[in-house]
Image 1 (cartoon, rainbow, N blue to C red):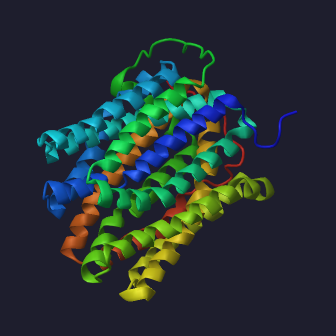
Image 2: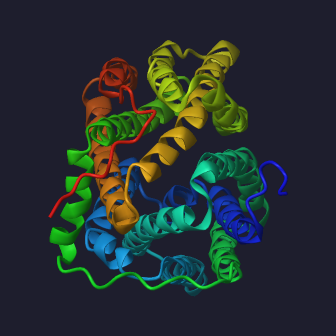
Length: 409
């Protein structure tokens, strides 16, 4: 008889691979912007354009990925995407060492990473569904969520200290190594993965459209999709105006700015631990509706940020409760999404979801950058906060039991 929460050796290797990649990513958090500003002397417009272009073009490049992933062995796709990310990211310390690093190279690497991330996520979701029992999906997703937030607490602080001691590309180099270790971890999972049924008859955009069609034909999944894309986009859109407000107008030192976002990440550990017991007691439907709505309430509080310690504590408090709500909502919604999609469409649905989410974030980041420049950072934050208050209206209702998968051509 297995102990509670034990998901097996193979899941252990998958979790270890995810963990090492997550810690590498968070060690390198903000490294691209740091290199662009401090090494290449880029201005704020160039940095914003680099971020938006990487997301947007990466999403476009990932359009044919869903159908391609669907009809490949998922573990092999995951290993391949780890190696692609390893090679692309390794070009940055190499370019820096040779003195040929440029903004164009950073943009190209951002594009490759964005597309590879989408492919890895699509394959990883499908592989997880085949690896663990349906009853264990929430436990598995909660562990991934907890790992992400653990890495976000430790990574930026350690990464910032490492940059100060060893130079501007040291954290990028650590991230490079993490992708190689992740590939080795996925390879160590072992076991035989059955070959998919056959090649897609509708490649490229037409094939990916099957993923969007499935989402749109499934009433509750459609509502969850629209809510997640809009909420995540608006939350991300407020990051640049908040950075300008805190570091510019209010004059917070860099260490306080980092502290304001590192401390609240502890909330991710709290929330991810609560997701399963809350769902067991109140039901997944109630948890998604309550915490899906609560996560949209807090960002408006960032408008109240002022100078000094009170302002710093305001940001920490708002981000803390926001992250707790998100960390409860995310694994529950991710589990529902996997349960609502039949095995033959998981990769296409996850790719369609990721492409749309990534492209939306890119557009909203750009739009809110223009809005903040045309009005003020505080007004841009207010606009995002007010719009977020409306988004609970499109949360799923009665999603505790998944609908049968819609049949689409």
